[in-house]
Structure formats: C-alpha cells, structure tokens
Image (tube, rainbow over all chains, first blue to last red; front, side):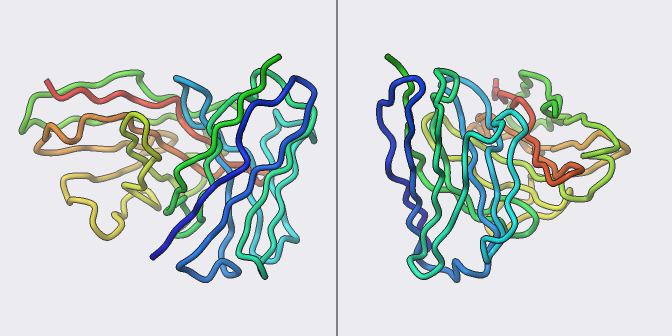
Length: 117
Length: 110
C-alpha cells in the first residue's frame, strides 16, 4: 500500500526549532521529487519546499528566508523538514507530498505544528 | 511570488456545469503546461484531480476537465453532484524554481 506518514508536529515556542518527518512506503521513494506543502488553520495551501531524488537540488518559497531546510534519506525512505526561527505565522498543517505527473499526486495526512508562547 | 488568483466561491445546482478560473502570469500559468488542480474536503488532505492542464489521473471522473488560455487556467465540473462540494486549488510551476498555489475556491452544490 502506498503511504506517506508525517510525524513530529506539536507545540513550539516562537524562535524555536522543530523537525517534521515523512515516512514513505509502497513506491520507489528514491526515484521521485518530494515536496512539503503547508496549510494554516482556515487558510489555503502554500508551497514550502521541494527536493530532487538524490537530494542535490532544493527549492524553497521566498518567504522562508533561509529558516527551513528540506532533506531526505533514501536509505530510510524518509523526507524531512527542519524548521528554525519559527514564527507564529508558521503555524500550519504540514503535508508531505510526492511529485509525479508534474503535480503532487500523493499526500500524507499532515502533521500540525503550532507556534505559540 | 504572489499566489495564483482564484474566485473565493462558486456554485451550481445538481446536474449543471461550473467553471473555476485560476489566473497567473506569463511567468507561471502562461509559461508552463504544468497546471494542476486539487480537491479538498474539510479536515482531509488534498487530492489531485487534474495535472498538466488537461489530464485526469486514474479514478477521477471524466466530469472534471481542465483547460488553459494565455495566463488563465480553468477547471470545469460538469453534471454537478453533491459530492463535488469541496474547496478546489490550482497550482503551477513558476520561473526560478518556484511552485505556486491559488487561494482556493469553495464550490457549493445548491
């Protein structure tokens, strides 16, 4: 069964750090670009970052200003998002997605990161 | 980079057709045939409905169709059904290694 399972969400204080993870199964993880998309409560979808199959090429939303880092471990079939200098406005559900067909064809269930004091 | 522009709401009666627009620029929607559309129910993850402007993934009903003209892409839902009531998002690749989403359109089946 194809699955993307995010973990690592929770409550973080402003200025803090958090790493969210995505465990992948059921398809050849090492062959696909992967992307993180987030959704603030009651808001729309926002692209966060994308990474190529070998991890050597990464794309980021301009608004992040270097605070987040996307990475992957193909041996562990896992995708990561390291988030530093977190702000209240980073509060969102973070979705792990597979890139295929020049789109995001598979989505995880999401993990909620809440930034609050 | 700004989000793509979608109307906040759309509606139609069962059996009717509804079209949702997604407007960008020549640097995103107009410059690439990589527009995709997603359906999202409350509390659920989005689902891919259309990719590469006009193509449907396996399992998506043929009532859903996509098109593009210049800098505006469109999603048409024909023969509206109650289960089509959801929020729809467009997305496009953009210049300089970027990905954009629209603000979302809430489709109501009257």
